Amino acid sequence: MRTYLPIVFRQNPVAMLLLLLATIAMLAFTEGSNHRASELVQRLTTMATNRGNLYNLNAWILEAESGQRGYLITGRAEYLEPYTAALKNIDAAFIALEAAYSRDSTSAPLLEELHALTKTKLSELALTVQMQKDGKWQAGQEITLSGIGREYMNEIRESSNKLLEIETRHLQASQQGVSEIVLYGRIGVALLTTVCLFLVLLNLKHTRAFKDQQETHQRAMQAEQEHLQGEVERRTTQLVELNEHLQTAREDERHRIARDLHDELGALLTSAKLDVARIRSRLGKTAPEASERIDHLVDTLNAGIAM
Image 1 (spheres, one colour):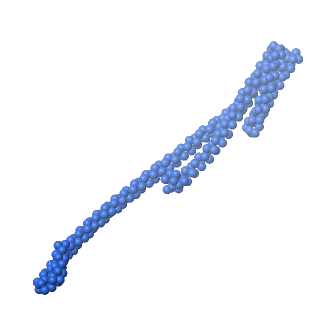
Image 2 (spheres, one colour; image 1 turned 180 degrees about the vertical axis):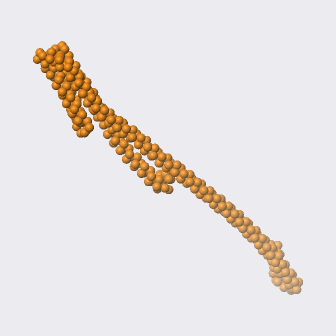
């Protein structure tokens, strides 16, 4: 495993520790950001749903009021169908809003106020509708024309707007949180990039130093190799010269020995031949057998001298 690690990690364990800590910190920050982003997305979804329910609540109250007035004006029962449907939708909207605001100490009182105002408004609508059914249409119209219904609607709008303002503040806070997550993410990426860039530059520095060290070592080895090669050549030249000197000395010694053998042995054989000649002259013909041996000896000495 050591072979595959960058040089900076093998030569500087602190860099390895720094990268490890930076990676762990980035992973922890990323997980935290993802968790917070998920919470913000869920909160934004909830706020969008609440805002939609508030808008729909106002629309359904107006729908109920429109159905009520149409029934009062025409006396026709089909105008009560949108009125009845709006009442059901209003109840469903309050159930959803109460589930959303039950734990919010700021919004819960406003929702109770809105619920009370809506009940009052719906009671006024139900009263006029019942009067129309009972044939007291003129009394119902007087209640409608009194303007009390408009006052209830204005109060309902004000309560709804207060809840919408709270949701708007929550939305702005969530948007700020998203901006912070993005900012922190950019800072984290920048820091990790800086650490990685620092490690890359440090690795390049160590790599360059390692290459320079290798080149220096290679040059030293090359110089040592050239020195050894020159020493080998010098010693080889000395051995060749010594061999030639020994060869020449052997030849000279051989020639000297041959010359000495030639001169001294030739002189000895010549001296022996002269002695044999003096012996022959003294013997004369008195000893024929000795003369034959002397002749044979002379021939042998002549052969030796010639050799």
